[in-house]
Length: 168
Image (cartoon, rainbow, N blue to C red; front, side, top):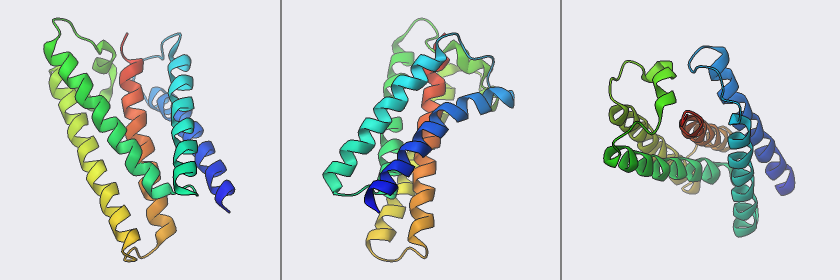
């Protein structure tokens, strides 16, 4: 069962990493994808698959709930870096974020990144709570809780990938 879970996790990672940005483009949340956006998606997708393989090796099995939490923390750290770089920069480092419709109501780039940072922190805390409830045996439905954690983590990471693609 362990290798089947790992295979499913890898397929879910690939589907969301490739699918979400194109879905966001389709619904009009972002402008057209740049010419080499697929390369960013491929490299980041490979990195997440490698992370899943390392986690599987470290834990002896793939744990969906911990994978989602890991992705939220990776996104949080990356957004902290993006925020600190944007604050210290004289130019807009993420001009494509202006096209990301859900953030367009926030006038400053620092404000937009700050909102994403707060969102990733909230997601990190939520997925941490899921892990806690599962490990204490309090999760009503372990499978659903694990899947929820995984999907939240991948969505958060996909939002960061959108920032990378929006780099210009």
